[in-house]
Length: 246
Image 1: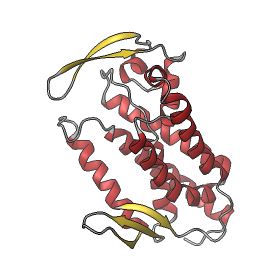
Image 2 (image 1 turned 45 degrees about the vertical axis):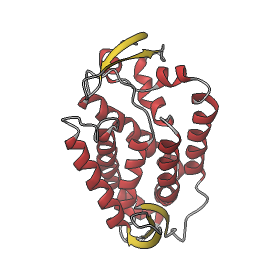
Image 3 (image 1 turned 30 degrees about the vertical axis):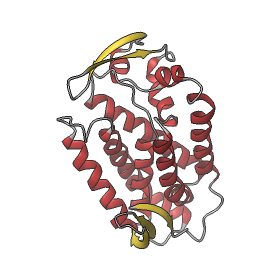
Image 4 (image 1 turned 135 degrees about the horizontal axis):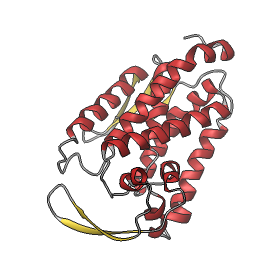
């Protein structure tokens, strides 16, 4: 199921922060990453660098889940290297990765921004993104493979949406038949199915296979868990200040 729209909150203003985040992600990918693979290697989050506190530079051999050994070339990153926990959440591994993430953020982020307000939404997004990166780092402590993407932060946004708008209707596109069709489901169903998929694949990835490797599942899980906790803690205050009817 691919989300293509949802119920907008009647009091929602212009989602300036959400659109700015989308614009930044697009700009970083098109203007910086595409012309420079070195930038991607330098500013992605690499667990061994972050936990070891050292910047890996130069060729590094890696063993893939199928046993094949390949070499990747690490570039010099920021100082301190832990800053990649933040920079990596504005980077992507390809067009499909980028556009898929931005679609989810566009559909769900505006209402969550309306609930929090722009400044608090930005803080929520960044905090859940960094915590998502840390979840990946701590579950792949020895990995020298770069990790990047907004998926962890967007997982937090989905959790916030689930807390604030569980009964909202979400329009989804289904591609299981020869002719694609759309229908409407409650947000709790759409996001609940998405979250279940992440947890199943996350725990399956403990023993890597061709199907589960290549995706930072625990970043998705960590971002969702962080977003759920932060949204639940914030909900009483958001309710009082925004006068939402839950």
